[in-house]
Image 1: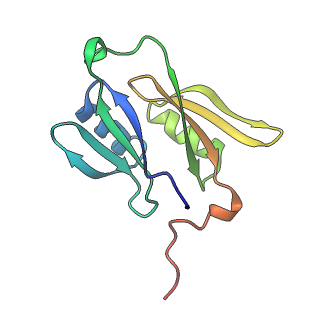
Image 2: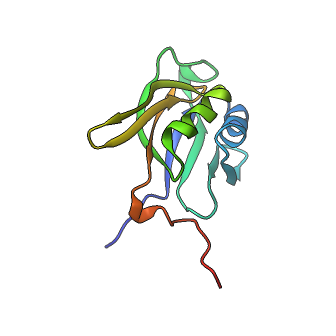
Length: 135
């Protein structure tokens, strides 16, 4: 039975602020919104989305003290160093600036709530995903 990623939850302190950051800074779009609990953001043509949900309990409304390695990997078709320079100019804080390692390029950054994301170039076989085919 084939399975694929549909969404991944990301805990945020203030969902409205988080939505603005993900859309304005990373260029995502709001895909779904439930005013009571969650908002999903992503790229409409690519399918996968981040499920932004406000945390409960004592964390709600508080900024995390340290970054949390979410294990969420974002891929890009753009040159990784060039994309990271652009994101840094928008205020994105990198926990691992872009670097070339033996198996390719990698960078890590955090959102305003301390969630850490991995950023890597898309494999060549997936670089056409999201592109429109000529009619």
